[in-house]
Length: 351
Picture (tube, rainbow, N blue to C red):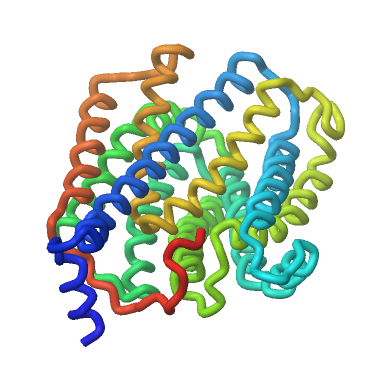
């Protein structure tokens, strides 16, 4: 009965209040679109800048240090945002202490991300980049599958076709990677079964982690703000990346050696990416976030071609068009997505 009354109220246009409510879905869609576009641009710029830094400039800083500084930036920025939305009669110190005590859900997610990084490393040591790239495209389907299992979503046949077409399009677009890698794969003296198992587990965990994050953000009874969740996640990720940095010994030039303006920019972009992913899930869902990052693959390759001399064949152009078409097919499919998990009541304006 409550849902019916809300539906009627949203469609009333007989007063100024009714018109304001009727515009809410449009505003929400505008925010969602803006976040996804910015996420796509951030991913593209991060990829191209990283390629320029390590492929053209041959910079020698440690990638683990870049990720670690990115987490520090996220922690500092999240604290800044939290300080502006403190509950009544609560100091920042008390709030941060409370968030730390309630951090286990985000710490679990941080461990998942750390495990996925390790699995990727194991996979690439035992199988070629081409095979790894092929399996990596399955993240689109694993995300959709866990969305149905954990959130009870039901997608139309048209949306499933769009996702499968999207996966195949990205696979075709990645043809230069797995085609050029064939000559190296024959020389790889790794355990093929171990490498394949590692990438399959990594892809499965990636889909699960995306939906787990969305479930915590949208349906958790605590209803913490998005900046509070980002603070918790960055706090849990910091010791993991610190461990990776210590294990690598700071790279070839020692701890924090070889840093440049580009490395600093990559840390800032990496931090921004984490914050944008959370916002995209808050205002959209994990599938739309996946669409944005998939679109970034196409955009970054085009930028790579024009500015860094990367490959762009006829097959890649056709595959890129297929990816764009399938993104549009999914986005503009009029069939509503059915959800069985209802978010708890809370302040919808709180981010």
